[in-house]
Image (cartoon, rainbow, N blue to C red; front, side, top):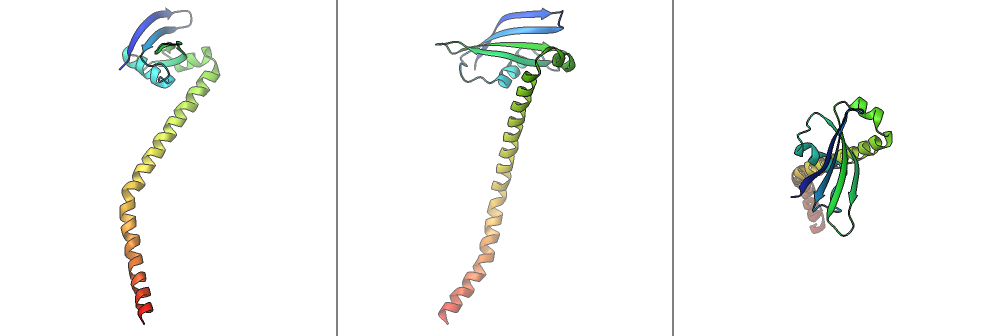
Length: 138
């Protein structure tokens, strides 16, 4: 498990947001933006707040990642202040994750139903095979 070390924690009252900069030790090249945002949310108990991962920087030769996050109380205010391309990227990532979860659930459901369907198909094929054998023997 990695350790989150707080570098800076600034309350920007002018923009009504909290700006966090953290180091994630041992996650160089393995950390994804949404996972980092979830980790920060859990570490700093930011449930109900809107956490935006702004930047993840890996350090050369180290397994260290430095992340910058903006924490807003209101999503509408965040959309006014932050570049819309960041939100579109986050939405695309969330959509891909949801799509992968749906595909995984669909893959599990037919796997459970497949043995029942296979036995039904074999039962239907069995009488046809018997009639073919009888025809050959005559």
